[in-house]
Structure formats: C-alpha cells, structure tokens
Image (cartoon, rainbow, N blue to C red; front, side, top):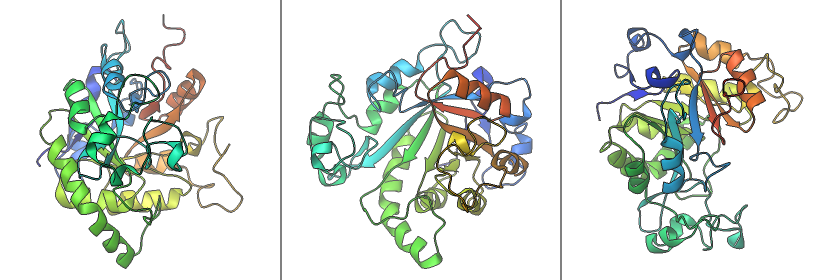
Length: 322
C-alpha cells in the first residue's frame, strides 16, 4: 500500500490531503492539518452512516449519508467521511457491524438484529442474513459498503474486536502484552487492508485497541487515529508511538466547551488537566470528536477548533444558514 491520506478540514477541500509515509514534515508539505485553515468548518463524519436516522452500518445508511455536495453551501450537504465498524465472521469474512454479538438474546447490549451469536463465531451466511433494527437492511460485507460510498467521500474504518474477549481496551500496553495481542490482530488487519486497498476513497483507520493500530502501521501507510475513552495520557502516548495523523476523543474531553468533564470524569483521573486539543494541534494531529447528537454540541466544538465532528445526524452545523 502506498496511500497515506485522510480527510481534514471541510467541504471539497477536505478530501485528499496527502502525506509522505513516515515523515515528520509531511504535514507541512500538505499545507497543514485542518486546524490551520482558520476559515474552515470541521469535517463532517457520519457515525455508522448517521446512526441517528438510518439503520447503522448498513449499505442503505452509508449510501444515504454520502448523498449531496461536500460543501457547506451545497443544497444537500453530504458527509465528508463515513465512519464504519469492521469485525470478522466465523468464516473469516469482514463485515460491517459494531457489536461483538448479533443480538441481546445472546448477551449483547442491544437488540441490533434478529439473529443471535458472537459475530466471529457465526458463519458468514447467518451474519449477512441478519436484519438490522427491523429495517429491511442486513449486515453487509465490507466490500458491499465500500461499493456504496463514492470515491470522493472518505471512509473512517474503525477496527472492532477481531475475535477475543481478552483484549485490552483503550489502554497503552506493555511490550509482552502488546506483542501477544498483535499476533491476534495481524490476520484480521491483513484482510481489512487488502479490501480497502482496492478502493479509491481516502481511508483513516481508528481503534480503541493499540494492537490494531500497531498492526496497521506494520502493514500499510494508511493514517491512523487512536480512539480515547477515559485516559488522555494513554491516548497521546499511543498517538506518539505510531505517529498518528489524528486522535479521536469523546467530545467532553475538549476544554473551553460547556461539555468538558460532564461524564467519563472522576476525581483523580489522568486527563483533567490536559488541554488535549492544544497538545494534539501542537503535535500536528487532527482532533475528531465523537459522538455528537445536537446542533449545540456541534457549534460549540466547532468554535473550540476541533477538526472533525463524528455525528449521528446530518446538518448539525446548519442552524441559521437556511
């Protein structure tokens, strides 16, 4: 793989900021990250294909989220990037699905489909025949989803669990633990990268799992972004270890907003005094925040200077413009 591109900034100018693989000065050659474009709105990233209004992670959802122009002036504003989740089936095929289990009947947290079973223990035929949220849409293969996304729209591929409930979540790992977990990730990573390399879309890989990002870095030059949960320290350490182009925190990790520390926060946590946005920007990394559901969240975070909004709904920055 030779590509190392990702969506940064807003509208038509957002797609195609290209980076030289592994070079520290690549961001400068590209004109800088999105936060250097003072007049640009954040990139709009459709979370699971706008899961608030469409059946999440389905072909229908990503197709609908892609429609429209990639400009704030477009009559219909399409997403700059579509965020999707990938997991393997029991047959080793890559499907687009968020949870480890197909349904709450099998211990899952949500009743996402009409089938049961752990995804990576279930045959591809059963997984891909499962109906998502009674929508008529079924769990798709990654190839089917990518076929439905125009090349002009970026894809944020989030690596979910590849087949073990013993993986460390959202943590910086020690040497032996990291190496052991990389062994678990490598085959799945190879499968996913082989698929996305056949498409022209800009691709950004994100994950809560350090070993996932480590194996992507071993096998490709695609950009990566750690997803943060309860530790800015661990997230920044992971970003620095792999020279991540972006970092994806929950929106309440952003200082100077009304949402800062309104959850995920306990006394003595290791992120209360870290200005994540400032540090990430100083290090040349984009900051894409998840998961937004209201125009107020979107407008306040845009004003704070984040680079991307991972949102469940379209049009969150459209209030007062129509």
